[in-house]
Image (cartoon, rainbow, N blue to C red; front, side):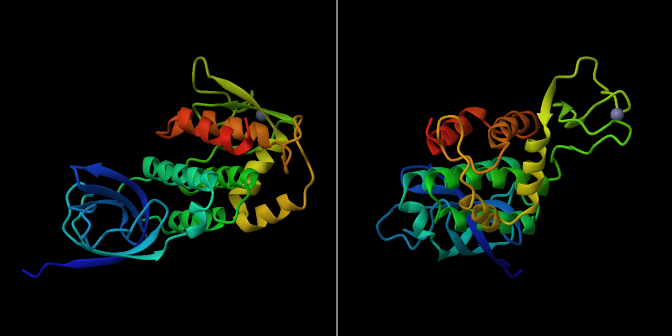
Length: 267
Ligand SMILES: [Zn+2]
């Protein structure tokens, strides 16, 4: 039987050591979902793979079709876009590796997500030119787009029987608003009161291309109480809400996100 080879464009999400000189590399491929490839002797000076991949690169992969548990053997890897700009500033590199790690933790293995692939590529591409506070916006934008793309976005729809209120009582575990007409199914739901501005900002981020979001941020002169740029109202609550919501609904580590955002926003 002939050995079948597959070819796909892929974004490198994670590189971890595996033995002294080898790597296990996880990719989000455009046509075969998430998969991992062992790269033996990757760090040997004569390795054909040396310098060909790193977190945030887009590469062309050629790999063997028959894999087990999402692990495939790789034949070739050529970098298509190394995103040089990500390496010119530590905060861009930090934001990029957070986005890649978040993707790795949340996208089911070997499920094809062309839309999310494009979303991640856009976020990484744009991050290359971001200032520090813009990088935090790009992170929030990606989190909103990811929740929407995975089909687990919070349901902020309004109850047709209730008047429009500034705050929506939101059941965290059920991921939706509750009221007397749409009561919680839980005995003691954990609820949050979510401001209209925050809910609109979520919608805006989830539905608007990142370059457009950044362009409108550049035209805003808003600052927060400490004088740091906060181009949109509701950003602080959105940041906080996404942290709590993703911890509840996705396999994410709240600590690493908090640290990363703190350094982007400046404490
Ligand atoms: Zn109601």
